[in-house]
Image (tube, rainbow, N blue to C red; front, side):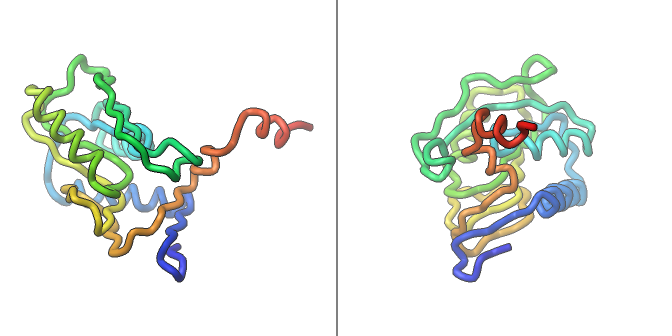
Length: 174
């Protein structure tokens, strides 16, 4: 649900999963057959898990981070892992790259460049996200929602960004 001022987009678990399913449909309807899914952690992990199950493709993971401070609200320097975790040795063939959103476009642009330069076994590379913001310099191949503004997207699992083990203990103490 987008707030009236257009500055915040609140997404429930049901909405989130529906959007992932819509993304799967868009990819399927494109007719593109890919060999591997590479998700960017953390934002693309949930998408990667679900789409690897739907498409029955191996899931590879590359860790990136850009939002680290103030429970994820403050953007800082982009860090990209030097390695990809995959069950099939090195990643190659046709690869679907997943992240939750194209915000500024920086993460996806940098990762696409690194993959093309360092993983010559990749023969084709396409990208998919749930949301693309108008300000993004990167345009993914597949997207469910194009956001004309620049709202902060409140995903349902963000409650865990500020939750600590001691708070869980208090919550579940009988």
